[in-house]
Amino acid sequence: MNKIAAIIGGGVIGGGWAARFALSGWDVAIFDPDPEAARKIDAVMANARRSLPALSDVALPLEGQIRFVPTLAEAVTDADWIQESAPERLEIKQRILKEIQSHCRADALIGSSTSGFKPSELQQGALRAGQIFVAHPFNPVYLLPLVELVGNDQATARAADILTQIGMKPLTVRKEIDAHIADRLLEAVWREALWLVKDGIATTAEIDDAIRFGFGLRWGQMGLFETYRVAGGEAGMAHFIAQFGPCLQWPWTKLTDVPELTDELVQTIAGQSDAQSGRHNIRELERIRDDNLVSMMRSLKGRNWGAGALLNEHDTRLSAAATPDLAKPIISVDRVIPVDWSDYNGHMNESRYGQVWSDAADTVMRLIGADANYVASGLSYFTVDTHTKFINECHVGDAITVSTQILEGAGKKVRLFHEMKNGSGAVMASCTQLLIHVSLETRKSCDPAPKVLENLRNIMALQAPLHPEGAT
Image (cartoon, rainbow, N blue to C red; front, side):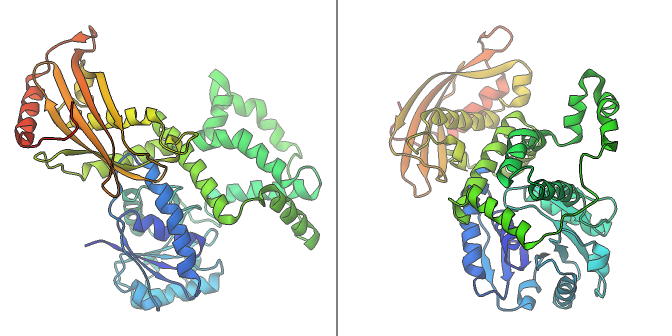
């Protein structure tokens, strides 16, 4: 039976939470009095279904059931996790949290998406203060992994474990403080940006360019302090501070002052912003944003760095849950086609078929014991020949599965047959692949370890009754 998440408030953040939980295999109950809530969350779910699975090289859990319920009580009664995402008004949040506690289980986790309020403020008048904590995410919640946790140590520890299991990065804040960590940093940049516009120094587009073509790229993969540590050269952070620290005393910024948000300034900012991106509607901008985030985070996966390392860890957790039936063709790949796999024709680039076959072969290698530890010992299998048949086109967002059968596994040779199908079961491509066992020290062929040969024989015996069509 799936765990249940209750989402109270189905706006941009609540909808993102619903998508993250549902696509991680949780059932979701949503309460929002807005008559348009279902339509809005359907749009969020459509984007999430297209983008979140594209971060993974393995299949996500089966999507949980999403229900829109007429009352808050019905949403929270059986929930394991309750996420309050109401408007950022303290009295509204306090009232909703008190109502939640009057209907929910005492062991349920109650997180608030608040970007600024402290847990001690949220807990005023609560029935069980320690049950309520801050769980502040970042938009889009279904893609960006960071969640700031503030509150009772026991509650936040339980919350951190659940968030990790659904592929997120919990950051437990040591002491409660207004706006937590990330928004305090964002507030500083936002405040200075407002002054730059007000004083006629830069437009909204120019400020965004300064971020996205400059330090934003560095921050996206290395953060603030590590970036400056590198800037200090071989002498490190101490040298950087000695060199640039004095400028902190200079009147460069206006961080202690706030420009008055007059109608004129608001209209200036709104007009520039609309001109900057007004050729796209909000749904198009969301998809552009999601595609860019997926591409950036997937590139970090290849380097096993930052958010990419987190995604690799989550893929490993998801893969560990799968137990293949070796008497059937092995499901060696189960995933969706990500945006960075498409070409100028709008379908999957042919080089990615080679990656799919390679990933499928890696699954077989792990099953026979020729895994990372085996490679580290100096032995491996190298592909020496492949024959691919391209049958149908694959496009971004398509779900694909590859079934693999071991056709030959004697001596130094392993011959595999892979068949790739789409979500409707149609065959998209197939491949016959020949691998030779080699010594990584001599780079020449050699006999596999006895255990690997034994595993091969056992799997082949189970698959002997199978006769794949199209194998060569």
